[in-house]
Image (cartoon, rainbow, N blue to C red; front, side):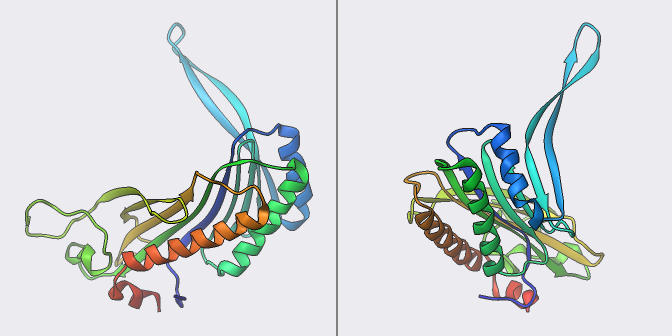
Length: 241
């Protein structure tokens, strides 16, 4: 259901490739999309190897891909050797805009790379539920979330911090859910913030045609929405409106 103040801090569509692509192909895709984004940055990985004999850290680097970003850095597209990512940071402007931008970026990738066999399709939404409080110690997780850690005994006070991960198949559309939830730093004093990170992905029976690909992405997004609603309570929903 739509909310006036959706708790989404990041939305991501990610496709992982079954094989890697050369740097020339990745850079060509970045150039094709360059006019639609304000920034074009190179992505590099820098590693340090400690040499025991000299006790010096020797750096080594490798090229990962390119990142295109809007002027405010809220919209980004990543073209990498083995991955395509489209993301949107808060404020989230809705699925229609995000989906259209993802389709456009993928069309540009396909023009540069040609047919791309995928190994994983994923839709991930990171949410942050900000709860206004007078006393952080009085926040009960079960008042806002239906998924939370439980102690084997009543210790007499709410949890002050936690982190939990659940990975399980959904038994629909060959999808798997990776759910992460934890306390995170609040944006303002007087709040407690709870992260709810939902990653729904598929690694089996992946489509070969783009029409089928977008159908699956849309279905995965529907599963994500259903899971989100099942994870939150009415008190949490009241915070979003």
